[in-house]
Each structure stands twice: as C-alpha cells, then as structure tokens.
Image 1 (spheres, rainbow over the protein chains, first blue to last red):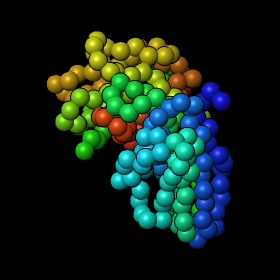
Image 2: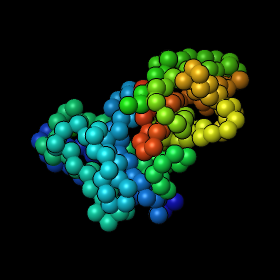
Image 3: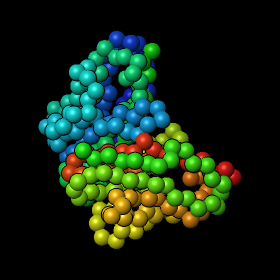
Image 4: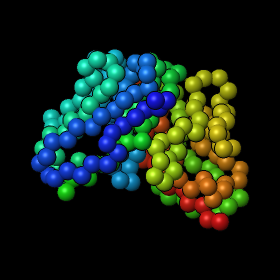
Length: 115
Length: 111
C-alpha cells in the first residue's frame, strides 16, 4: 500500500488479556516508530527500530510492553496482561532513514480499549 | 532530552479570524520542527516542516510557521481560518532520531 497500515483499527480487551498490534510501514522505510496517544494528549514515544534493530525502547511504560520487527519490515507491539491505563490510540510511523531532515509518516492508529 | 510546549489547549475562533498557535521547544542541538494536524476521526497529517534555510515555512491549506531560533519558537499562523480547519494541532520537534510532540491545541472554528 501507499501508506502506513495498522491493524486492527479497534481492539477491545478485557483486563488481563494479552493483545498484539500490527504495523505495516511504507515499503523500503528503514525507521519505524511506535507512539501512544492517550485521550486529550499528544503522542508519546514508545520505541524505535532501525531495520530489525530496536535502538530505543526508553518510552515503553512497563515490562508488559514488548515490540519486535524481526525482518525489518512489519512490526508488532505486544501488551501483556492489559490494564485500564493501557487504553489509548497506538500510532505507528515510518521514515526513509534515521537522522535529521526526514519526515515520519503515520498510520491511522489502533484504538485500544481495556474494559 | 527534548520537550515541546504548546501554549493553548483549546482555541475557539469565528470563520475569517486570524490564527496563531504558540509552540516552544527545548533541545540542545540541531532540530527539525513540524506541525501536524489531526481532523476528527482521521490520522495525523503533516501541515508543514522546517529543516533548514528560510525560517518562514509555508504548508498546506494556507498555513505557515516561523522558526525563531533565539526564542526556541515555531508558531503556526493562518490569516483567515475556515470551519474546515476545526481539528487538533500538534507541534513536534525532532533531533537525530525521535519525534517529541506537544500536548496539542484543539481548534474549533464556528461558522
């Protein structure tokens, strides 16, 4: 596809359930980012990949959050034992490369609601 | 660490009014600056960006922003807003790798 694709668009999980969110970046984009956007807030950085290497995971809020990008393309964000505070929109973005003077393109996000 | 501060959380304007949304950032090195817009129910879209050169940048839909390095500011402007500009606006700063966003400004334009 032409843009960043995320699935599912909406996910309702019961508290304690594990969830997996998928991101298909723009083909050929080296860098991939995950952000969390709580209601009424700006996107908050979670983690970042360059190809298959996870270079920064400083934004992951707890060890229940895990992200991978095993072949340097599709990425999955996994949340174990979901809690109500995990309810948010999870955004994925990709860019052609790391560094300055690059633009990130965002997907439509996955809205996670934990009940 | 980089951070972004947006001055107003909510702005209400009438159509044809002028708009200025404030954005200040903190970062110790060279930065790229962005304004993104999020229309209701839609994904983040890039309005404009500053990488280098002319500090006055023009974006889509008549928006522009001015980078003032001495003030660490990147304010967004539009001379005459339309009802269709109702959306949430995010300022963002990028160092070498990651984007850092402000908390956003919700703009409501009344017809």
